Image (cartoon, rainbow, N blue to C red; front, side, top):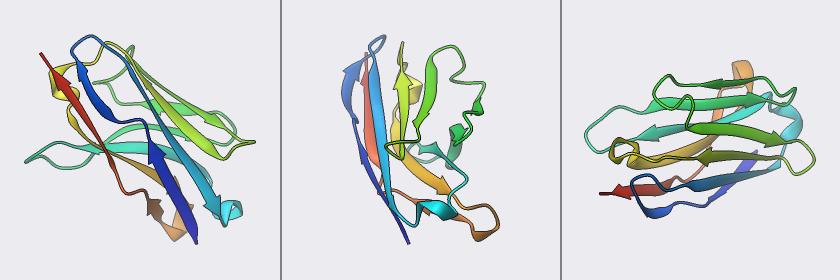
Length: 116
């Protein structure tokens, strides 16, 4: 089992910043990397960013240049620094732990709301 605890969501105005954190505990040895998805009302869940323990990262085109994912191996924690937030970034953000063929563990989700 892997437990994921997210923090850092909230309400901000457009152009402001937020940092999300997700700490993993439990059977970390089964995890290859971590990342974030988001789901806006009425829309499908979409991938935002991912990071491997080796430090390789990916970012969705919609957030490139604004969001940065990072991973702290010592703390088993992944971060999502979100700058210049836009209204369309409003969503519930879900952290996940990637166990390869074993699938994903998911966090409970944290709400990010961007207002004008």
